[in-house]
Amino acid sequence: MNERYARQELVKICKLLYDRQLTVSAGGNMSVKINDSEILITPSGRNKGMLEPEDLVLIDSKGKVLSEGKPSIEHKFHLALYNMNFDTRAVVHCHPLHCVTLAVKGEKIKSNITPEGVLLLGDVPMIGYFTPGSKKLVEAVAAVGDHKAILMERHGAITQGRTLEEAYNRMEELEFQARLQLLCGDVEDLPKREITKLSKM
Ligand SMILES: [Zn+2]
Image 1: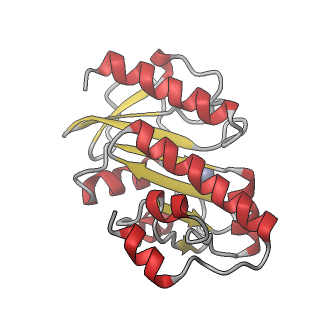
Image 2: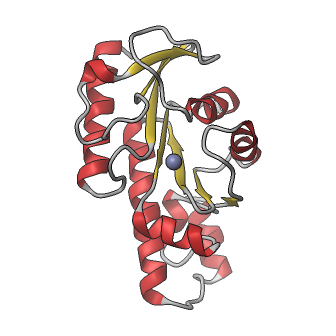
């Protein structure tokens, strides 16, 4: 992917996340893989609704900064996901209100209530609370890094995908499922046979 195009696309996704209230103020961080050795990531401490293409920071697969700007403090778990999953080309981390509500309550997201949840998300593990930017947080994310979506206790959520659109869609779906779960209260999953059938689609 061409760097100029990647900068425009990532800014577009950040604005969409912000406009859809999937992230607020300077919260969250998003990245896209340009090629095997270069990743474009959001800068540290900036509002995601106000970014310009030139604000994004280019880093290599070890985290070395290759452009102007300071990358997000969380760039290490982005790198961990890219390094362990060859197919992953985009990572989105943010703090959607209903996901965080469940994450603060210590409740796992039920992604098997509706077909979309099964199809887009699969099982969503919840990792414990670790200080943002810490090595322990990176290790905890990597331990469940083969999942499409991850909930982070008292913090937020992470999704990954083969494209920015796929990672974005998974975050939007995750927040929808979290909100649905809070609205529905105590509900049963779809029948096991149906979940198996959907998982194979
Ligand atoms: Zn965060």
